[in-house]
Length: 282
Image (cartoon, rainbow, N blue to C red; front, top):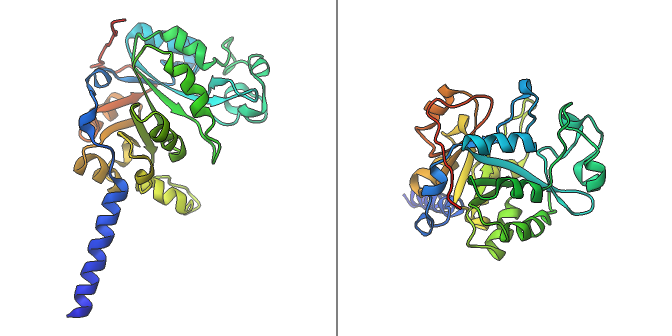
């Protein structure tokens, strides 16, 4: 009998510890309404067939004109200028070798996006274009331990008058915001992190189950919409009411299904039938 009680106590402690780890910040401190009134165009309203590449000024302009919120990616150039670009490497979108941080802004501006005339935008250029007209989800691209993009890009955001929230896969970025800009709405990006050749490692296990939320206490969980049944996601969003954000929706059918588990939606490659148009007052 004592052995059974010991097992029950251990199980209870594990459950309570897990819940403490995944718990997001108290949702009552935020007004979510202006963010939920918009669907968010993933890396802008890009369209490869029309020659409008992702994370380009053309894609951002098109999203603003359509009234969509925008999700975008920010990282640093070699000379520490925040630029808008998703991949850490340049090959897929520019055909150039190496990583973004290995080139100066002047060098990056010589490259073209996906065979078009579009250049890699700076974060400042992007903010000037949007000018507070639609809400933003700003993803910080943080590779391993270097989260210096956070204070550098945040200096630009402090002068920006529009609505924005921030997110990252890397908890270090959210930890920086928790310590230095705790009033800003922050979100943990995550996924099931499947890999064909097996287990990706303990770090990805903890990220998958949101077990590092104790470090960051995020306000929202941006999760791959295909894996809404993951235990950590369900605990953080259904039990603790963390705001669930779906990425990335690629069809009307996926959007309709995602509404069962999410309340904010990031989309691409289609135009939603029941889109929510938001033009924010300036």
